[in-house]
Length: 277
Ligand SMILES: [Fe+2]
Ligand SMILES: [Fe+2]
Image (cartoon, rainbow, N blue to C red; front, side, top):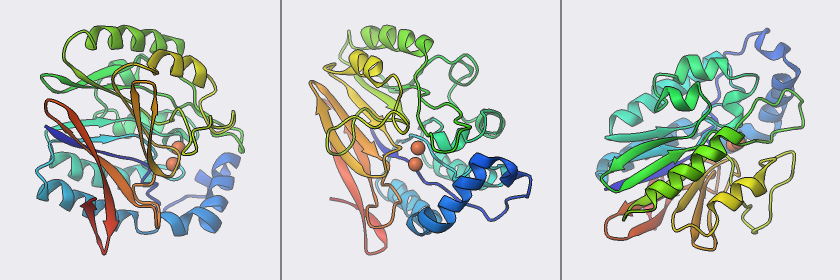
């Protein structure tokens, strides 16, 4: 089977209400978007259509999305994002969707009410446990919720709860017993493109705790948040960031082909389409 890993679409809508922007966090985020980010994600919808074309043309079986569908997490953005993501997900058999920090910009309630029916189970969304999505007889995606609301404006950090860390350990031990290919999906990554650990205000505050559980295990770690598409290894653990999926001049995502071995290929945007290469 083969699946793609995409992330960080940051779909924007002009439909903000005055009330939306009353939250200081959102207002600062809106200024940031208008003056810095907008030009980087301006064609996200066109690119999402091209990702859909890639999925159809290459008979892709699954999509993993690792968060940041929206920009400021407003209801208008969620509804727009949902229309596109639903259409993309209808093209494949297997899907895994997690929120990013922008989707929990103020609180969890909007994400849960709009995407609750698309998230893989109540365990993940209501009980704060990580969960497993079976993509084939021996391909499993463990979804991890590493985001938390950050009402204070300069902070965009994540945290993996103790309950999820505990359930992650058990799931990894159980799934790695057989000949399984195991992918852990989180919005926040473990390392930056230069191999260093992200800052306390932008990365996972308990990064070491998570890294200790997953590093040197013979499996894969998929994430977004850092707006580059890159890979790195932590012992036997192979890590893939897809945060550059639609980011201007860095557009790329990952294609995983899972047969006897797992082969990962980067898919880059060139001349108006996404191509393997
Ligand atoms: Fe992002
Ligand atoms: Fe993010």
